[in-house]
Image 1 (cartoon, rainbow, N blue to C red):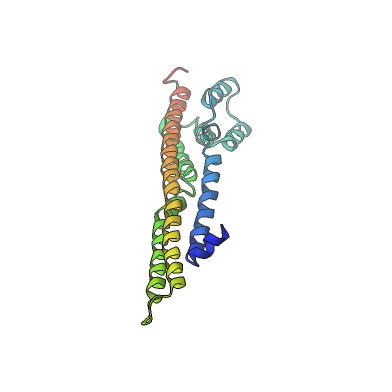
Image 2: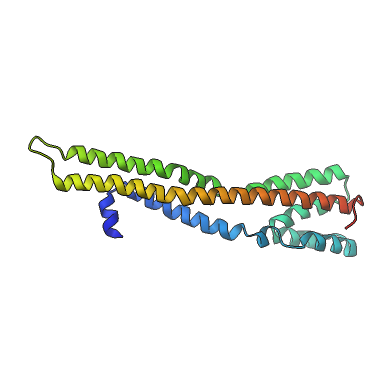
Length: 202
């Protein structure tokens, strides 16, 4: 591995840094965006049942808020359950925007790494081509310098693509996952408003 890094030259170091950051972000998002963590099963039903049995208390709302992103949205609705339907929906929408932003955390960075990695690889290719042309002299080409230039060009291009392809796949996967979660949370929030305002039966 170290011999490959040596052959690829100094342009490989920014790519290595980008790959480490990308792997760390992918692992973090895989953990953070688990469905059981974002949308716990049966949470809405438990919240409605507890509210109808005991009403809402600050301790119950605070516990719900700390539980999950969906819990934060439902807690915003419960805080304003005594207000009009419009005010309750408005508070849920405000919290929903904040939750949506939190779910998309680091995705811009991951998408940026996936987009610029081929360009960083291309930069390495250009550096390699400069090495190749630098090996030319009136007496002929220097084989060692020529081989080094080719190594820089090929390794950096390949490594840039190696980072970009999985980075783009995971970025698109996480974006679709977040969009799906947001839609599910919107539906459950609307259901909470309708249930607590007596417009719908559980």
